[in-house]
Image 1 (tube, protein in one colour):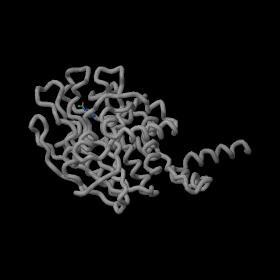
Image 2 (cartoon, rainbow, N blue to C red):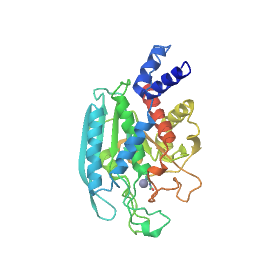
Image 3 (cartoon, rainbow, N blue to C red):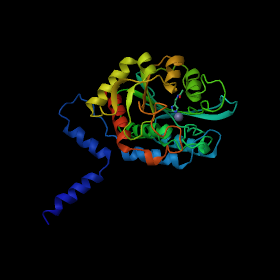
Image 4 (spheres, helix red, strand yellow):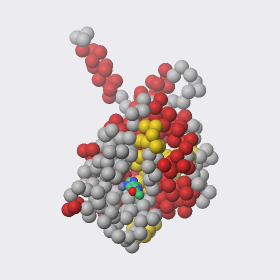
Length: 327
Ligand code: AHN
Ligand code: ZN
């Protein structure tokens, strides 16, 4: 009997959620000035990823895209102090007019000192890097490419609603990032990616909007992810890259956050840097052993829940929280 009791207590301990753990951490904190950093719940983040994928591919101008957008807005409203929705039409490289929505969730909007966190929520209409040519015009689930970054940020949003950091935070879910030029269609390429962030950068939700710095999450859910120093991040915000990577290493995530030079990726952060002059870095999974430089299933029909790894979501989510709550 006396053997069973500790087991039961242990199980009860496992069942308590991150909020309870948090309170304990606060009680035990020996220093009054050290920030209390919430515990990132990777199960919760994983579930947010799963729910997005369950709508089907979030390709602009489809029912799944509308339904997932409505779901995102509802979730963001449950966590943020203020939610802005930008509803607009954007012209894709092939002439298609995309009905697009950017969602902006503001936390402590009265604060002047702000940090921007962002990810894209749409998924690519074409698996143009699939090994099977029959799939080259099939849409992708985008579990990693799209849903992972949003899932991590929804969990960050949930935790922000429970305890306030010293800084204000804006979480932006950009639309129409992944409608860039199809590999096999002959068309002009420049600026065909990241249409939602290009729109927001030219038309921010508040005309005088500024954030001290920003972090973009792109493909943060694959097994053995490798986050190297992305080129434009180093060009526009080298000190932010160094800060984030050093916090990640201190948190024990040095195997994901590698101190190595990565490639230059045209992504949402590029336009926010270039057009809005806000230093934004990209935490993006770059590989040295694949033909395109990204994870194995990039822009293939295998970018599914089967290839989402909770330990990667956890490393990125906990790192972002540590950055935010230390500011
Ligand atoms: C280019 O391939 C030019 N940019 C990649 C940005 C991207 C696509 N991120 C996810 N999907
Ligand atoms: Zn993509």
